[in-house]
Length: 247
Ligand SMILES: O=C1O[C@H](COP(=O)(O)O)[C@@H](O)[C@H](O)[C@H]1O
Image 1 (cartoon, rainbow, N blue to C red):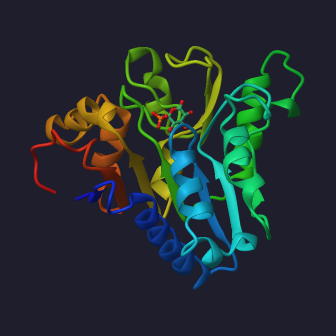
Image 2: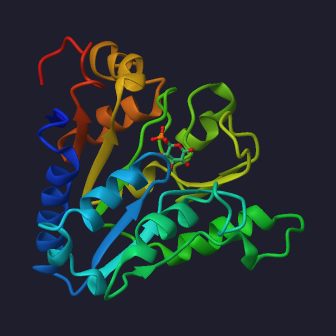
């Protein structure tokens, strides 16, 4: 059974997420010198800024020098482009840190020349950079139920069905920018924990499909089904308002 952490605006979800991340940090550092976490882009980044930078009860307890931060997906644009997941994280979090910086591993497409096979090279390179087992994956969930750059529909099924390659690419994402690099399910299978964050009334139909209908055509619902015991969802009461099933 997945674990749902549901909060109202007054209950301050970013603070609760911050406490959860502190616990995950402690769990990891109890058995390892580093905390390996991979993050998404999109709306998650603003929540991370609130939880890890703006929250004065959480921020001083984050041991940034021990955090190794990877990305679960990236849009193929320059890293300083507003659509870059790394760029968004840098602007919202990294540039705001007053002291120690984490070790950060962007998915950097400028490492290849853009010729034939360039995307495959970026994916293969990132596969070598990613640790086999990440302590935590922090995921978003798009309105169509996509997570990372794993999109629903027959056209993108090859990404969901991939069993060998841990990092893949696609050229025709239904959500722009169209060229993307993404982790695949084997990375999720090996991860210690998975945590989704989904906020706001605009996510209501998606939450209904995932938690009532259990529509596993949606990659986020499939992640629930495959990895249930280690999956957490941080949701606000707006996003979860129309979910009927009790969790
Ligand atoms: O394009 C992307 O979208 C998803 C979901 O974003 P959200 O803004 O609806 O939360 C995100 O998790 C992913 O990393 C990103 O590339």
